[in-house]
Each structure stands twice: as structure tokens, then as C-alpha cells.
Length: 398
Image (cartoon, rainbow, N blue to C red; front, side, top):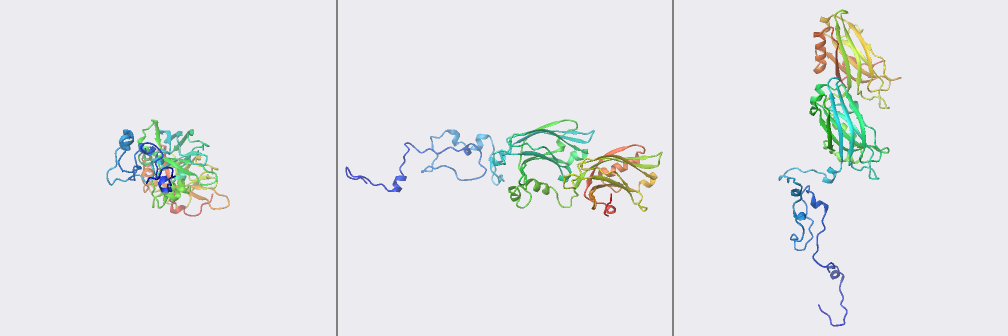
């Protein structure tokens, strides 16, 4: 509509907002997501009126993001990750060394450093520490932990953590879980990321170096997002590992067996324990060991070590003697139980193991070797489980 010369034209607000105040064609704003593969189908971000791709853009902006990175596009019906790609790349990396010493039955874990951890606190930093667990097994009994590094996303620990009592059987079927968490003094510690290393990847007496990106825990329980969001991540992960019907591991014990032909009896050496379950509120136990030779009609086969205060890795180095003929010993079962000493109340059962012809695995082999090799001192590590032997079910007294 054209007005007369000298008249002032009036433009309503709708027409005013439609005026293109920028000369030239409207260029779409480039986004960082244009250079990375998309996780799922979604609307394209073009804003052109005609719906055609602008020809003035550089070929880089028009090329498919997956093709730019050399990635393959998922096939139709393939499952994609449910979390955003930014979260998957922002957890950080962890550098560590692992060494399995077959001669001493030890696993040495050197936690070196981490880089680019995900910020967890309001200041944009974190207070990270590292926890180690051997799976399957009781997390409380075999948990090792580094010190906490304050206010950093690139912590340096340089700490050596050692598992004792690691056998060749453990190497073949156990997995080492390395979890990085953020320590919060006023609330629950928060889970950042983890790495799982099958121990079968290690070769005896050969140090292996790792520098791996942290990963998220795969949800296996109902509503895991609730646990993670409320800072229960680490606690929820420990509970998820315990399947129904599995005996909980409570630590390891190093036993020595030897049948003395001269003294006509069995020598039982209680050498040490490792990574016992903590039974007291201070995070430790006051352990001692009891042994029985079953069946025990006269109830005279009980032996007991001294109590070691406030430790999960006690050294006893005590030896007990059972006077018995070798032929009779073959019908017996050696019962070894570990207890936590408490003053003024019943002692807590930590774990136990039975050695005899009716045992399984390493316990049965150790007993069989002892009977077949008289006068030879045989030392073996054994796993303590939460199964309380029937005869030991009564209340224990120190």
C-alpha cells in the first residue's frame, strides 16, 4: 500500500517484526553438535523458510557428522546409549599399573593419576579418591582405598595398594573393579566412573600399564537413577554385585598343614589373615582364630589364637598340634573360623573355611596333599565365607 507524498506511513507490530533488518541472506548459526555424531533421530536445526539446504555453507557443515569422524552409523534397530555423548566423554581418564606376583600370591595395584575428571562440586572441581574391589566377592572384605585429593580434576595419587592371598584360581575368574568417587563430608560420596579389568589379562611377574577412560555403571537394579542422583552410587554398586544364593567372601587366611611322622600328629599353622570384613564401628575388627578337628566327641580339639586389636590384616604365626594317627586323620575335617572379639557381648563371626575330604576346590586339595606328603609343610591361602559351620553356630566366647 502506497501513501501520498508527505503522509506518514503506519506499520503495525506484526509487519514491523517481519522486516529483515540484516542485509543479505539469513545464515544459520553453527553449533558444536554439528561436528559430532548425533545419538538418535531428531529434528534438524535448519531455519530456512524454503526448507532447502543453504548452498553458501562450507562443505564441512553439510557433511554428516559421523562421516567426518570416521564413525559408522548404527544399523536400523540398533540400540543406542541412553545418556548424552557429553556425559560419556566428560568422566575422565585413569592411569594405573597392575602386577601379579605369583610367588608371594599378591596383586600390586599402583594408582598413578587421573585427568579431566567430571566436576562434582559447586566450585567446578571434585575431591576424588579411588576404591578397589575384587569381584565376585564381598566389597567390604576386599575394599582398598586411596587418599582423597582435594579440589582438583587432575589428581595425582602415586599410591600402591596390595591384595594378599591372590591365587591362580583368582586370576582366572576374578575381575578388579576400580571406581573413582567424589568425597562429600556433608552427604553421601558420589560415583564418578569406573574401570573393570579381568585379572586373566595379567601375566605373572609382568607389570601391565593402563591408561583408560572411565565408564558409567550399567544399571542393573530398578530405578538406579534415583540411587545415583541422591549420591548412593557407590553403595548401590556394592549391593548390585551380591547375587542371590552366593556365599559372601569375608577375607583370606593363610594356613600351614603338616603331618609329623615323628610326633604322630597334625601341625596346623595359623599364619595370617588378609582383608577381613570390618565388624566394628571404627571400620576395623579385633580378630582371633579358632580351630576344631571334627567330629569332636570329647570336645577337646579346640585351639584359639590370641586377639589382634584393630586390624583387618592380622599376623598370628601360631601353631597348634593334634595328636592323631594318619589313617584316622583321613576321616576328620579341620574347621577354621575367624571371630571378632567384643567386650561385654557376644563375639561376631567373621568367616570360616573347612578342610577335609568333603571340602571343595583349594581346601580339599590342601588337605589331600597334606595326607599324601607327610613331614612337608604346605602353605595355602583360603577364602573365608559367611557360611557358619553348624558346630560353630553356638555363641562364641573368647
